[in-house]
Image 1 (tube, rainbow, N blue to C red):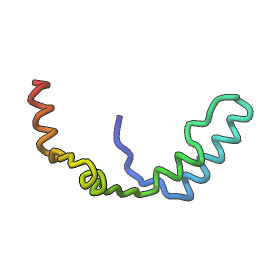
Image 2 (cartoon, helix red, strand yellow):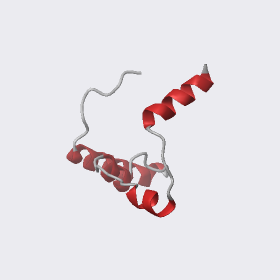
Image 3 (cartoon, helix red, strand yellow):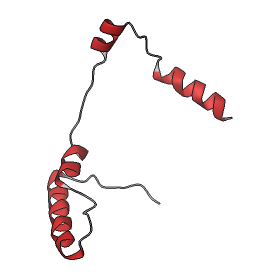
Length: 75
């Protein structure tokens, strides 16, 4: 399967979820794209773990180290 070549714009997602919702009224199937999934697909979310680190003292591994450890176990 080829990866997508065009970015789905907000208006495209708006048309898609509305069309799928309308179609689902006749087919009685759940729409594959909902208003919420369309919105979340274009929303950027940023998270900060400083509060967890300060309150619990947990030290997280760097991502590169975690990937290295996991791939070593999968060999």
